[in-house]
Amino acid sequence: MAATKLQAFWNHPAGPKTIHFWAPTFKWGISIANVADFSKPPENISYPQQLAVTFTGVVWSRYSMVIKPKNWNLFSVNVAMAGTGLYQLSRKIKHDYFPEKEAAAAEGQ
Image (tube, rainbow, N blue to C red):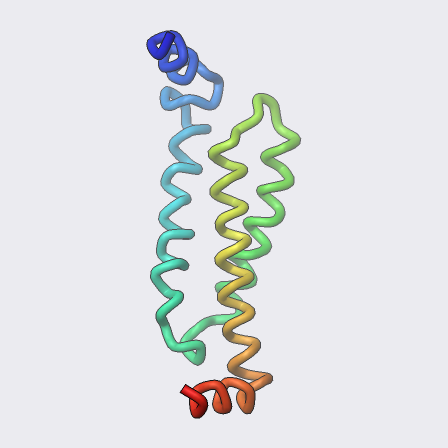
């Protein structure tokens, strides 16, 4: 049974024998790098970069559900990109536009 599932995965139109598998797999590097940047100071976050990551994630998440065959690897990496981009944008916006709340929280610790 496991062998047939592995064979089905291997022979899937978006499986490891195709670029449709490897492109999204390597795209995970962008999301991993964004997660690694969660500890980066907010003043070093780039609006254009994070907007690009977020909008790429949103647009391609939608597109990945329209194409045939469904490519769940492409969908999941783009959801992760949109999520990490939104989180980074929220950190940057909070730092740039609501500094008094951030300072008060730091003093209370």
